[in-house]
Length: 276
Image (cartoon, rainbow, N blue to C red; front, top):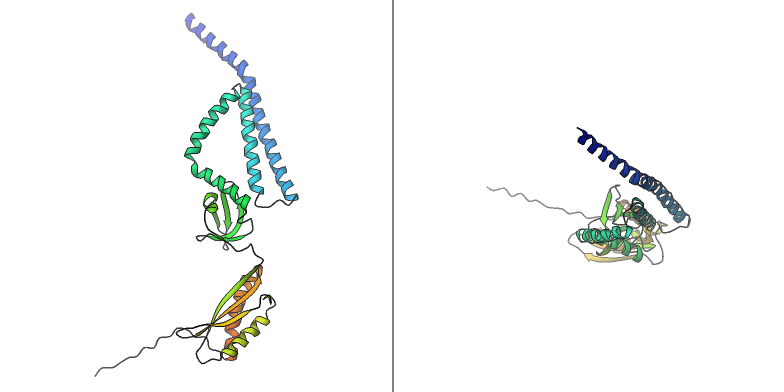
Protein backbone atom coordinates (compact mmCIF):
# COMPACT_ATOMS: atom_id res chain seq x y z
CA UNK A 1 0.00 0.00 0.00
CA UNK A 2 2.84 2.31 0.84
CA UNK A 3 4.44 1.62 -2.56
CA UNK A 4 1.21 2.57 -4.34
CA UNK A 5 1.04 5.78 -2.34
CA UNK A 6 4.63 6.61 -3.25
CA UNK A 7 3.96 5.97 -6.95
CA UNK A 8 0.87 8.19 -6.86
CA UNK A 9 2.85 10.87 -5.07
CA UNK A 10 5.61 10.58 -7.64
CA UNK A 11 3.26 11.01 -10.60
CA UNK A 12 1.48 13.85 -8.87
CA UNK A 13 4.77 15.68 -8.42
CA UNK A 14 5.64 15.06 -12.08
CA UNK A 15 2.27 16.44 -13.18
CA UNK A 16 2.76 19.51 -10.98
CA UNK A 17 6.26 20.03 -12.37
CA UNK A 18 4.97 19.74 -15.94
CA UNK A 19 2.11 22.12 -15.18
CA UNK A 20 4.51 24.61 -13.59
CA UNK A 21 6.92 24.31 -16.50
CA UNK A 22 4.53 24.23 -19.47
CA UNK A 23 1.36 25.77 -18.05
CA UNK A 24 2.45 29.42 -18.27
CA UNK A 25 3.87 28.86 -21.76
CA UNK A 26 0.69 27.22 -23.03
CA UNK A 27 -1.52 29.88 -21.46
CA UNK A 28 0.68 32.64 -22.87
CA UNK A 29 0.61 30.96 -26.30
CA UNK A 30 -3.20 30.68 -26.26
CA UNK A 31 -3.60 34.31 -25.19
CA UNK A 32 -1.12 35.41 -27.86
CA UNK A 33 -2.99 33.38 -30.48
CA UNK A 34 -6.36 34.90 -29.60
CA UNK A 35 -5.02 38.45 -29.43
CA UNK A 36 -3.05 37.90 -32.64
CA UNK A 37 -6.12 36.69 -34.53
CA UNK A 38 -8.07 39.70 -33.28
CA UNK A 39 -5.31 42.10 -34.42
CA UNK A 40 -5.06 40.34 -37.80
CA UNK A 41 -8.79 40.84 -38.27
CA UNK A 42 -8.39 44.57 -37.52
CA UNK A 43 -5.45 44.85 -39.93
CA UNK A 44 -7.30 43.01 -42.71
CA UNK A 45 -10.37 45.22 -42.38
CA UNK A 46 -8.17 48.36 -42.28
CA UNK A 47 -6.40 47.24 -45.46
CA UNK A 48 -9.78 46.69 -47.12
CA UNK A 49 -10.99 50.18 -46.17
CA UNK A 50 -7.72 51.75 -47.31
CA UNK A 51 -7.90 50.02 -50.70
CA UNK A 52 -11.47 51.20 -51.11
CA UNK A 53 -10.52 54.81 -50.29
CA UNK A 54 -7.54 54.64 -52.66
CA UNK A 55 -9.86 53.27 -55.37
CA UNK A 56 -7.82 50.09 -55.81
CA UNK A 57 -9.19 47.83 -58.52
CA UNK A 58 -12.14 45.88 -57.10
CA UNK A 59 -10.68 42.70 -58.61
CA UNK A 60 -7.56 43.00 -56.42
CA UNK A 61 -9.19 43.80 -53.08
CA UNK A 62 -10.44 40.34 -51.97
CA UNK A 63 -7.27 38.67 -53.29
CA UNK A 64 -4.92 41.02 -51.40
CA UNK A 65 -6.99 40.86 -48.21
CA UNK A 66 -7.02 37.06 -48.23
CA UNK A 67 -3.29 36.87 -49.00
CA UNK A 68 -2.37 39.30 -46.19
CA UNK A 69 -4.61 37.48 -43.72
CA UNK A 70 -3.15 34.07 -44.60
CA UNK A 71 0.45 35.33 -44.40
CA UNK A 72 -0.07 36.98 -41.00
CA UNK A 73 -1.79 33.89 -39.61
CA UNK A 74 1.10 31.66 -40.68
CA UNK A 75 3.59 34.04 -39.01
CA UNK A 76 1.45 34.14 -35.86
CA UNK A 77 1.21 30.35 -35.73
CA UNK A 78 4.99 29.99 -36.05
CA UNK A 79 5.48 32.53 -33.23
CA UNK A 80 3.00 30.70 -30.98
CA UNK A 81 4.76 27.38 -31.63
CA UNK A 82 8.05 29.01 -30.62
CA UNK A 83 6.51 30.31 -27.38
CA UNK A 84 5.47 26.80 -26.39
CA UNK A 85 9.06 25.69 -26.75
CA UNK A 86 9.22 24.02 -30.13
CA UNK A 87 12.24 25.10 -32.18
CA UNK A 88 11.06 27.29 -35.04
CA UNK A 89 13.75 25.98 -37.40
CA UNK A 90 12.72 22.37 -36.79
CA UNK A 91 9.07 23.29 -37.19
CA UNK A 92 9.75 25.13 -40.44
CA UNK A 93 11.69 22.11 -41.76
CA UNK A 94 8.83 19.79 -40.88
CA UNK A 95 6.37 22.29 -42.35
CA UNK A 96 8.41 22.45 -45.55
CA UNK A 97 8.41 18.67 -45.94
CA UNK A 98 4.70 18.55 -45.20
CA UNK A 99 4.13 21.41 -47.63
CA UNK A 100 5.88 19.47 -50.39
CA UNK A 101 3.70 16.43 -49.80
CA UNK A 102 0.56 18.54 -49.60
CA UNK A 103 1.60 20.44 -52.72
CA UNK A 104 1.90 17.21 -54.70
CA UNK A 105 -1.51 16.13 -53.45
CA UNK A 106 -3.11 19.50 -54.19
CA UNK A 107 -1.67 20.29 -57.60
CA UNK A 108 -5.07 21.43 -58.86
CA UNK A 109 -5.45 23.88 -55.98
CA UNK A 110 -1.99 25.34 -56.57
CA UNK A 111 -2.81 25.63 -60.27
CA UNK A 112 -5.91 27.62 -59.33
CA UNK A 113 -3.80 29.91 -57.13
CA UNK A 114 -1.36 30.50 -59.99
CA UNK A 115 -4.31 31.10 -62.30
CA UNK A 116 -5.67 33.73 -59.91
CA UNK A 117 -2.32 35.54 -59.92
CA UNK A 118 -2.22 35.45 -63.74
CA UNK A 119 -5.77 36.81 -63.99
CA UNK A 120 -4.99 39.69 -61.63
CA UNK A 121 -1.75 40.53 -63.43
CA UNK A 122 -2.88 40.21 -67.06
CA UNK A 123 -6.47 41.36 -66.40
CA UNK A 124 -8.38 39.46 -69.13
CA UNK A 125 -11.42 40.55 -67.13
CA UNK A 126 -12.21 42.44 -63.94
CA UNK A 127 -15.04 42.69 -61.44
CA UNK A 128 -18.16 43.99 -63.15
CA UNK A 129 -17.31 42.66 -66.63
CA UNK A 130 -19.73 40.49 -68.58
CA UNK A 131 -17.87 37.40 -69.83
CA UNK A 132 -18.76 34.23 -71.70
CA UNK A 133 -16.59 31.15 -71.22
CA UNK A 134 -18.48 29.03 -73.73
CA UNK A 135 -20.15 27.01 -71.00
CA UNK A 136 -21.12 29.85 -68.68
CA UNK A 137 -21.81 33.55 -69.01
CA UNK A 138 -22.47 36.26 -66.46
CA UNK A 139 -21.10 39.26 -64.60
CA UNK A 140 -17.84 38.80 -62.67
CA UNK A 141 -18.75 39.30 -59.00
CA UNK A 142 -15.40 38.66 -57.31
CA UNK A 143 -11.97 37.15 -58.00
CA UNK A 144 -10.72 35.08 -55.05
CA UNK A 145 -7.40 33.28 -54.57
CA UNK A 146 -8.61 29.98 -56.01
CA UNK A 147 -11.93 30.72 -57.71
CA UNK A 148 -13.81 33.41 -59.62
CA UNK A 149 -17.46 34.05 -58.75
CA UNK A 150 -19.93 35.06 -61.46
CA UNK A 151 -23.56 36.17 -61.25
CA UNK A 152 -26.01 35.17 -63.98
CA UNK A 153 -28.91 37.39 -65.08
CA UNK A 154 -31.31 35.18 -63.09
CA UNK A 155 -29.15 35.71 -59.97
CA UNK A 156 -27.40 32.34 -59.81
CA UNK A 157 -23.80 32.17 -58.56
CA UNK A 158 -21.29 30.33 -60.74
CA UNK A 159 -17.95 29.34 -59.17
CA UNK A 160 -15.17 28.78 -61.72
CA UNK A 161 -11.61 27.59 -60.91
CA UNK A 162 -9.01 30.22 -61.72
CA UNK A 163 -6.70 27.63 -63.25
CA UNK A 164 -9.34 26.76 -65.83
CA UNK A 165 -10.17 30.41 -66.56
CA UNK A 166 -6.52 31.35 -67.01
CA UNK A 167 -6.03 28.62 -69.63
CA UNK A 168 -9.25 28.78 -71.61
CA UNK A 169 -10.71 31.02 -74.31
CA UNK A 170 -13.38 33.44 -73.19
CA UNK A 171 -15.27 36.42 -74.58
CA UNK A 172 -15.29 39.67 -72.61
CA UNK A 173 -18.18 41.89 -73.68
CA UNK A 174 -17.21 44.79 -71.41
CA UNK A 175 -13.76 45.78 -72.65
CA UNK A 176 -15.03 48.07 -75.44
CA UNK A 177 -17.31 51.07 -74.83
CA UNK A 178 -19.37 50.35 -77.97
CA UNK A 179 -21.01 47.23 -79.38
CA UNK A 180 -22.63 46.35 -82.70
CA UNK A 181 -26.15 44.96 -82.96
CA UNK A 182 -26.73 42.58 -85.88
CA UNK A 183 -30.34 42.05 -86.93
CA UNK A 184 -31.77 39.89 -89.69
CA UNK A 185 -35.09 41.22 -91.00
CA UNK A 186 -37.10 39.20 -93.52
CA UNK A 187 -39.77 40.59 -95.86
CA UNK A 188 -41.95 38.81 -98.38
CA UNK A 189 -41.12 38.42 -102.04
CA UNK A 190 -42.91 41.15 -103.92
CA UNK A 191 -42.40 43.79 -101.21
CA UNK A 192 -40.36 46.84 -102.21
CA UNK A 193 -36.75 46.74 -101.06
CA UNK A 194 -36.61 50.55 -101.14
CA UNK A 195 -39.70 50.80 -98.92
CA UNK A 196 -38.19 48.24 -96.55
CA UNK A 197 -34.90 50.16 -96.40
CA UNK A 198 -36.58 53.53 -95.82
CA UNK A 199 -38.85 52.08 -93.11
CA UNK A 200 -35.86 50.62 -91.29
CA UNK A 201 -33.99 53.94 -91.53
CA UNK A 202 -37.03 55.74 -90.12
CA UNK A 203 -37.00 53.46 -87.08
CA UNK A 204 -33.23 53.86 -86.68
CA UNK A 205 -33.37 57.66 -86.85
CA UNK A 206 -36.16 57.70 -84.25
CA UNK A 207 -33.95 56.02 -81.62
CA UNK A 208 -31.41 58.44 -80.11
CA UNK A 209 -29.44 55.58 -78.59
CA UNK A 210 -28.26 54.39 -82.01
CA UNK A 211 -24.97 56.04 -82.98
CA UNK A 212 -24.34 57.80 -86.30
CA UNK A 213 -20.63 57.00 -86.26
CA UNK A 214 -20.13 54.30 -87.45
CA UNK A 215 -23.16 54.73 -89.69
CA UNK A 216 -26.01 52.20 -89.59
CA UNK A 217 -25.73 49.56 -92.31
CA UNK A 218 -28.67 48.07 -94.22
CA UNK A 219 -28.31 45.64 -97.14
CA UNK A 220 -30.04 42.69 -98.78
CA UNK A 221 -28.12 39.73 -97.40
CA UNK A 222 -29.98 36.68 -98.74
CA UNK A 223 -32.75 35.57 -101.05
CA UNK A 224 -34.05 32.84 -98.78
CA UNK A 225 -36.69 30.18 -99.44
CA UNK A 226 -39.65 32.27 -98.29
CA UNK A 227 -38.24 35.74 -97.62
CA UNK A 228 -35.85 38.45 -98.70
CA UNK A 229 -33.50 38.87 -95.72
CA UNK A 230 -31.99 42.23 -94.84
CA UNK A 231 -28.95 42.57 -92.60
CA UNK A 232 -29.13 45.55 -90.25
CA UNK A 233 -26.03 46.58 -88.28
CA UNK A 234 -26.27 49.23 -85.60
CA UNK A 235 -23.66 50.66 -83.23
CA UNK A 236 -24.64 51.58 -79.67
CA UNK A 237 -23.03 52.23 -76.31
CA UNK A 238 -22.34 48.92 -74.55
CA UNK A 239 -24.90 49.65 -71.85
CA UNK A 240 -27.65 50.18 -74.44
CA UNK A 241 -27.08 46.93 -76.32
CA UNK A 242 -29.94 44.78 -75.03
CA UNK A 243 -32.42 47.64 -74.70
CA UNK A 244 -31.96 48.76 -78.31
CA UNK A 245 -31.99 45.20 -79.65
CA UNK A 246 -35.26 44.28 -77.93
CA UNK A 247 -36.91 47.59 -78.82
CA UNK A 248 -35.87 47.39 -82.47
CA UNK A 249 -37.34 43.91 -82.85
CA UNK A 250 -40.66 45.07 -81.46
CA UNK A 251 -40.67 48.35 -83.41
CA UNK A 252 -39.86 46.60 -86.69
CA UNK A 253 -42.73 44.17 -86.21
CA UNK A 254 -45.25 46.91 -85.40
CA UNK A 255 -44.03 49.30 -88.11
CA UNK A 256 -44.00 46.67 -90.86
CA UNK A 257 -47.61 45.76 -90.04
CA UNK A 258 -48.51 49.46 -90.11
CA UNK A 259 -46.99 50.19 -93.54
CA UNK A 260 -48.05 46.92 -95.14
CA UNK A 261 -44.71 45.11 -95.32
CA UNK A 262 -45.08 41.37 -94.89
CA UNK A 263 -42.95 39.39 -92.45
CA UNK A 264 -42.98 35.80 -93.78
CA UNK A 265 -43.24 32.78 -91.54
CA UNK A 266 -42.90 29.07 -92.37
CA UNK A 267 -46.00 27.63 -93.95
CA UNK A 268 -47.04 24.19 -95.10
CA UNK A 269 -49.67 23.44 -97.71
CA UNK A 270 -51.51 20.14 -97.21
CA UNK A 271 -53.33 18.65 -100.22
CA UNK A 272 -55.93 15.95 -99.57
CA UNK A 273 -56.69 13.62 -102.48
CA UNK A 274 -59.90 11.60 -102.39
CA UNK A 275 -59.84 8.23 -104.03
CA UNK A 276 -62.74 6.78 -105.88
